[in-house]
Image (cartoon, rainbow, N blue to C red; front, side):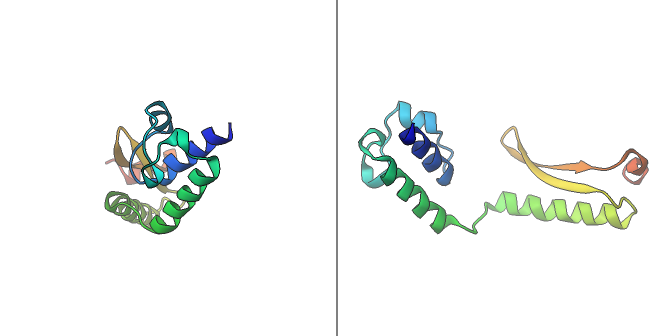
Amino acid sequence: MENAWAVVSYAQATPAEDLARVLAAEDARVVGRKRVSQLSSRALADEAKRIRSTTAGTLPTELRTARQAARAVQKTLRQRGAKDARADVIRNAGKWRIQIEIGPEDVKLVVR
């Protein structure tokens, strides 16, 4: 159980879109070219921690752009009178999307 969690943690830390199930099923080579089955949960946890520390604060350009656009949309809607407007970035079908939430009374600010 502990090794399973370590594999999941490692998969989440890596920037590549590798899945924990794929890493385990294919007994992929990871840390220092060793296979997942040859590593202790501690070694996987340490490697995940190292990866997180080196990639901390870095966001993909697409995500950064989407967040800036969401902030701009939210600001504009609030300036137009939708005081509780909210714009969030979500991932759907492999693409970044902006999800907008407004009250029914504020629809007139968006649709004419």
